[in-house]
Length: 504
Ligand code: ARG
Image 1: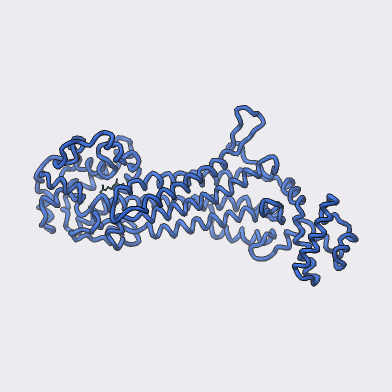
Image 2 (image 1 turned 90 degrees about the horizontal axis):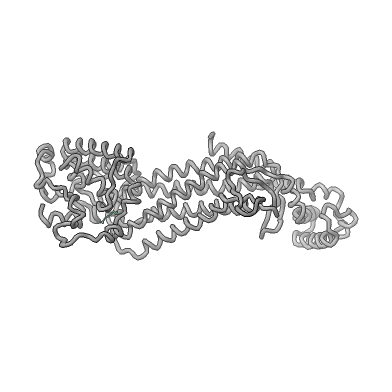
């Protein structure tokens, strides 16, 4: 094979056969049996020099620096699936002979089996997952392997692989989010009546149902799932056919490949198809937001488990001890989740920064999209999986929660609302209650512990019935508005979530 042909392979990423034999697009059968001009596998030479154009081999350091196979081999199944769909279409379009197609299918089956069993030998000098698989295919089935790359470039190949892989991961993450929501609903249900001090500014504000508090996270995680599904629609577009950057002169049937691979459509601009990674960035944004939600939950679990709160306990299997302090039981899992949120947010920043300076179309910078993306998926899926279990292992201490709720004049708003119902404007009622709280603080008692005569000094319209409202339970039960914390409303929401999430 001439130097020009090999160089063409590097630059335009076209297969040798497209150069050896440019014209007979539809002369299939003869074409597949026709020997190629050379029996050399050009991949064999790569450790010596990329092509005849080059007068020296790549240094080992540069090889290591540019190679991605150590991490992108993870895309192998998507790479093979996409190659098979491409080959099937080439055959249907009579660009590839039936024999060659059969050989490719056979070779890929062997490669998939070898990768699965661990027998496949990944070679750093073959740079990435794509060249490793293609080189092995050519080794196994000869010229048919060399013809696979017809009308394709690694640029549209890698964009396709990442999208295929990410689509599958999104589906797994959505299932994990469903499991976590179910776990939260399972804990919320028996705790609908349990009273927790609700906080604003981390100061006791109003009593809330512990079940209601947990359902707040169910809302967050259901939006996270919604966001992932929305991102999925844009991930699920086919880049193949864009080739290196400009499209290809072969009469490819892109819609057919899209259908075979389950893509919802094809990318409509070849330059955009190979160059943009916005789908990975928006996935990372959705993932980072989901981790932020987990992190907030983690922070609460950590606080609640501390001696100062003592609201819950976490099952021992999610905690560790201290090497020096024998009394310690530390909530390591939520702490790590809170910490790992930082790295996922960091990956989002990394990907945005990776993209911002790149001119169209493909640049090697894009190879750097994989590690952050992989780590984002791994971190999020491990975290969601652990949290679905951890939530089930929460033991609730209702007395401690209720005791804390009693401390902070959590029913003051209820007294104000009572006065409003007696005809006072809300702002005046607010002021009256502020005086009452001041006196109660000075006497070291709760509002409900002030005698009626004292309460009436703040406003004469206050009657005996006020005491029912000044209890935590009364305050909770009064919040019957849709989305409110009254246990009856919490149960309405639990039923809605159960219907939405379906049975486990
Ligand atoms: N390993 C490369 C990546 O991840 C594949 C595409 C290489 N394309 C190229 N023209 N060098 O982006």
